[in-house]
Amino acid sequence: MKLLVLAGGFGTRLQSVLPTTPKALAPIGDTPFLALQLENWIAQGVDSFTFLLHHQADQILDFLEGMKSGMLKDCEVNSVIEPQALDTGGAVAYAVRTFGLEGEFLVANADTWLGSGVRELAASTGPAIAVLRLADASRYGQVQFDDKHRVTAFAEKKADGGAGWINAGLCRLPASLFSDWDGQKFSLERQTYPDLVRKGELQAIELKADFIDIGIPADYQRFCRWIKENRASALCN
Image (cartoon, rainbow, N blue to C red; front, top):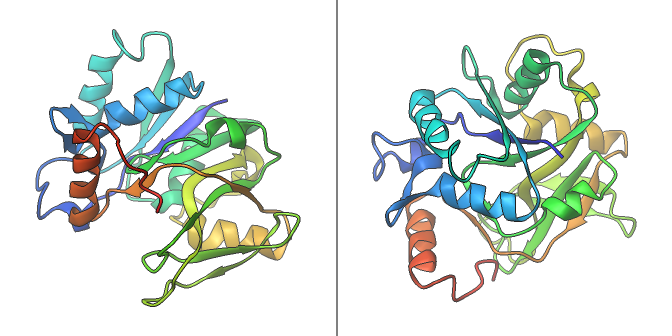
């Protein structure tokens, strides 16, 4: 199944430690974060990638070009650069329109490590999002779903949120969702998902996987330590 990779964000919260490097290429020791992502996705069976780019796109394109004779040599690789920042939903819609995509595909965040989930989402019936349970979900909004795994609501994040299910940053969506796009920026999380919930059409796929969003310095450094320690401890607890 095709994987669309959201890699066009500005990385504002990481600029204090990565002033000239896009989040996707954050160095993990001597290895760019995206190289670890690609290794993980390919190991899960992905062989078709479309990278959705904007901020510092040239650096990511140079990286991908260098990978085509190595890790990506047996993969289909495409990229598209948004003419302006279109947010997550607009980025996907722009790719759908640019490449004439049809059917269903997966969408992942370039800056979120998720140890598994590709096979589970590929086997699901879309639209669907991967969810996992954190002991401390206070940094994230929580996902609520019923006993049939139909998402019923998204709760705002709370400082004292405690344990809960969160959006793990991987989803399966049909191209038809974006057929009427008006060219304006919009968010999957704030607009597309809530609209699907109102229609009763969004499924939650439960995962048990290592997870970390490197979008803030503390978690970026935590991921670096985890890799250095040979991934010795789970990140989802």
